[in-house]
Length: 507
Ligand code: BES
Ligand code: ZN
Ligand code: ZN
Image (tube, rainbow, N blue to C red; front, side):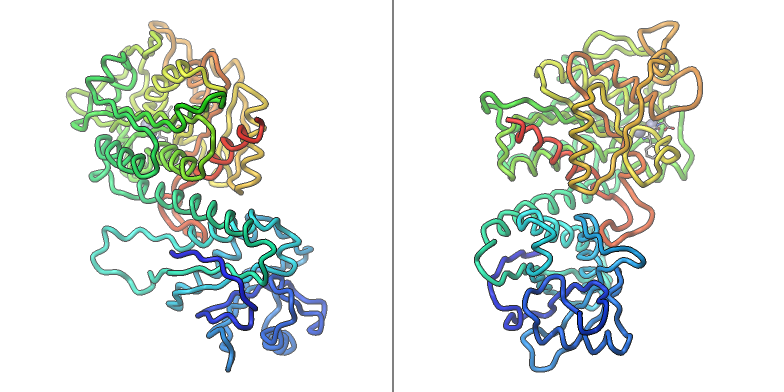
């Protein structure tokens, strides 16, 4: 989708569709568009409809108008009022409105949408974040995954162009920079969705690593890919234990931006990259297994976030660690009862082969300490228990440092991707004691599965500030919303980028 910032009077702007936002007016006379500063002739058309009772300005209310002798071929009138509530417009709300407009345009086959940024809209939002929100929402709502369709459904029409319209030059620089940031974040979130949605027969660990290398080269990130031999040299026994059941060999990807960035804090991002999780010998049932191509979502988020940070040209020194395996049952597969040794020398009793994410993350977390990081954030579809704890409303946040947890919560508020902090009580760690090894990968007692998974990771995140995001219930969605279609959601790219950028501001 092409994104342009243009200066023009709204009524002179030639476009296929012009988006006008309205809150419910106290009376038809008081009608005013949220994103217009001049009482334009377009207003009269809406006023007539309000008078007839055909339009109220409620949120989600959309109306297409076809003005005669006007520069715009169509007006898309969108309500932003909320029933029984003061109009309370925040970033996530505005993004939903924009996304509704984009979806409605796509249904009509409209290829071009123009959004004036003016009037009250600029009182509610600073111009740069406003432009970022609008562009990001349009890209997310315009997403579709079609490489495997040989016939493209005509309902799948996509917007080809989005124009942000300004009345004058006052905010032009800020809007252009916000639009650029929105384009970067929206595009990389969609890239993460593409990886998530790719079927597991086409996205092995080796293929993921190849794609990471290609993308890293595009944005000038350094990228190192370890094969099985190198992983063995590094003594990553926990990762190798998971990988050994599969015909697909593992990979370990190390991305780095601003390696030479002197006096910048070093941040490490780690993403769970299980390209398919059958459960191993503790094999899952069909229904649960069907969701398991998304078990590399953390890895997709880390790759996308690093590429986005590179394009945003942040001065931060950021490292991405992506352990990649396929978890399969076979004559070579690891058994419940096996003991493996992570690269920091700790031994792990594999009590359940389906708790494989924490095994590969154990090696990555142990490896992260050599970078002497200011903070480490891992992101993983770690436990099915998250479906019970928070459902698809928020990701689980765990941290060994209060200030880091606060930074992530602040980032969440800015991106609209919700997190909720859950405890790391000592009882969870105690229940991971093993008779035979230093730790077991699942607890002896049932319950609090997400916390125990996090407690296992915490015991490998030693010597640095660490936070863990369990995105098991956020990574994919069974039902479409205007911002996230069915399938991979790309959840986490924006919050991880924003959390990193907070360290920049600290400087
Ligand atoms: N990949 C799964 C977690 C998961 C489940 C993600 C559902 C998304 C949707 C993970 O590897 C797993 O199987 N976890 C087990 C842990 C258990 C064996 C302690 C689980 O959640 O059942
Ligand atoms: Zn599993
Ligand atoms: Zn898994």
